[in-house]
Amino acid sequence: MQEANTQRNTEGSTAARFQTTRGTLSEMSKLMRDLAGADRRRVLVTGAGGGIGDAVARRMAQAGYDVVGTVRDALRAEALSQDAARAGLRLRYLPLELTDDRQVEALGSRIGAEGALDVLVHNAGFGVFGAVEDVDAATAARQFAVNVLGPLALTRCLLPGLRATRGHVIWIGSLAGRVALPFQAHYSATKAAIALISDALRMEVAPHGVRVTCVEPSDFATGFTNARCLSRRDDSAYALVSGRCLAEVEKQERSAPDPAWVARVVQELAESADPPPRRPVGSNARRICLLLRLLPARLAERMIRSHYRV
Ligand SMILES: NC(=O)c1ccc[n+]([C@@H]2O[C@H](COP(=O)([O-])OP(=O)(O)OC[C@H]3O[C@@H](n4cnc5c(N)ncnc54)[C@H](OP(=O)(O)O)[C@@H]3O)[C@@H](O)[C@H]2O)c1
Figure (cartoon, rainbow, N blue to C red):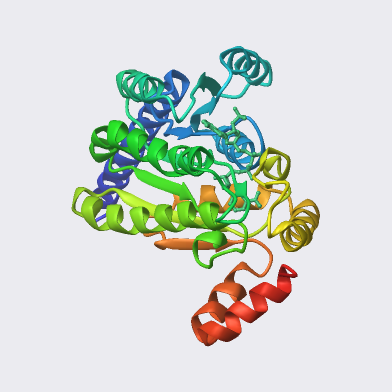
């Protein structure tokens, strides 16, 4: 009996030693893969030179992802890459102008050739402000080219790779895509378009294991306010009211929260196996969505007009 116990103990300790050795070997091989960067998930963030995109790119890099951010200016891309390398971040920047089809295709091919992409964050965008009657055709077209058509083209280029990794497409939409904002018709329309593209895409790629989410921020303090394209004619019939509305919009944006909040949400979504289709984020964002669902349309519109002093 004692002999049997001794033998069992000897077998147990051999097995334990074997387990420990196997554990150590697997830890070592994981460490080696980590060092080689093979285990890192790759993320592409468009418009990563400031605001929400910058916050997302840096947060993901700090969390251990291998991040590529885009900015429009090639020299700036170079300088930002060097800064990030000095800070010890796996974050590099490539140039991308979303209205340039060739640049979009070149970036898509390069990202595809460099290896698997796990997360695509469509963040780059800007807003046009002006009455429907005042905004000219070229400005309207540019709003859709940057916010919708460029991201769509990039999605087409990168989807084969994202299907291979069973990756995740995250669109930075806006609460302005849930409800139309006065004097921001074009911007609201692009964000509504993004949300619906996101919804349709999710159904198409679900069988391939690709996740698709639309993040819907309310106001955040970023360069968005200064970058806004103001389309106001001197003889505009809307000058007084649109001026009042713009002052209110800018005041609210400038006192809004830091975009780090959006970055945290994007990371959570990227790491979720079952992310929600849409994710409002920001002060009162969820409450606003609930109200918009519950309130009669006329009452909701009255509240929006009063909010923007229109
Ligand atoms: N801030 C808010 O309150 C808010 C609320 C809801 C949704 N959003 C959305 O969040 C996203 C990020 O905006 P943000 O607030 O962070 O504003 P931001 O600081 O102005 O950043 C916008 C980024 O988009 C890039 N971009 C603009 N036009 C481009 C083009 N033609 N081609 C390529 N890149 C272009 C800019 O690139 P460069 O660095 O090269 O200029 C910049 O990095 C946008 O889609 C915006 O609609 C913002």
